[in-house]
Length: 298
Image (cartoon, rainbow, N blue to C red; front, side, top):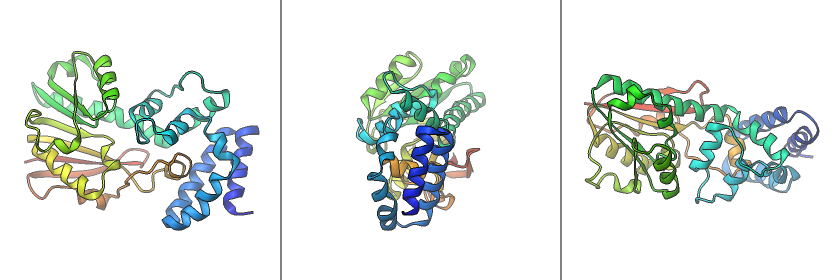
């Protein structure tokens, strides 16, 4: 019996008869450790092939979060509905009792904590930028459901003259329109058009919380440059990206078929535009799963 089969058997036994959180945690941590050690071909042969034929694959699909990542109803894993699962930690109606137990373990994981911290951090960033100015303009790129908007206090909202929530997903924008009515302006646009669409204008604060996880280097570099051009003098551009050694990577790639473009500190530095940068710095979230690049424009 292979090491992977032994791991999957142990996790299945814990989920069905023992400590589900212990089983899920051991599975996630060991899968990530293996993923960091193996190249793509060895990973596929030694891990993916074994997992897909193991009963554990079916069991974990009881979780609506894991199942949505696999089914990809919006065409990709990690859509705004999945982020809501992480942010609110509430399973949808109709899932099984086992599915709800798995769901609660998955969304309570360090990766889930990073998603929730990211939302709080963005709300705090908007508040800090608002304190610096009597009037603030904000652009959220690939906004999803823009849940950070729900966390803003009235004093912060009073200083925001314009908050544009931009996304190409019409369903996500409809949620923004209904939940942040009269405060946030949803705009449907492909990110490829940001550089050329004159209707957007410029902003004191621009941020993108999850888009760069899906952009290859050339596209990410071009978009970072385009966003900095739309940032006003003295304004802030913030970009977030999951790291290669994030806690949940092994589970995401093995169980959920969810593949991100992961970046180290050095990789994030390559995105910094060659000009118009007054200063930049990098920092991690408290769980070391996401890295943030913050740029101040000249």
